[in-house]
Amino acid sequence: MQHHLEIRVRYNETDGQGRVHHAQYLNYFERGRVELMREMGHSYKDFEATGLMLVVAEMNVQYLAGAEFDDVLHLNTKVDKARGASIYHSYRIIRQPDQLVIVEGTSRIACIDKQGQVRRLPDFLRQASE
Image (cartoon, rainbow, N blue to C red):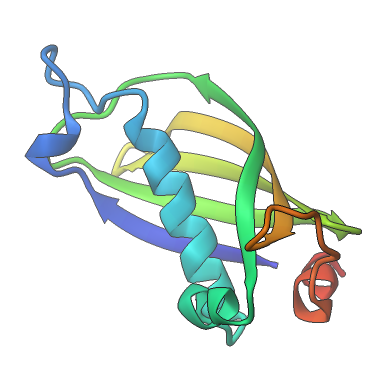
């Protein structure tokens, strides 16, 4: 399962050097995960209403090039595997129109309840990697 999202870099997402601030890419990744879940027919808001939450357990990012204000980026978010209480994603951000890969990353997202106890992923998330 994967999702594609177009992002136009906003001015407030850049740093003093005029580049997208490195931490902003984590926000882009989260947007990708939320939209991927929506494409699967489930809103994150409704998911949390069931008493479950998805939290970042591990994040790896490789910064390969820079992006600047008003650049158009394409984010690909993919479910690599899902089992037990964890779902693993990979990300690739490509600048348009030159098709330059800007950032790649991976994450492990864990499912917990509101008390912080680890819980098994719901079926629809476990099936996302099939």
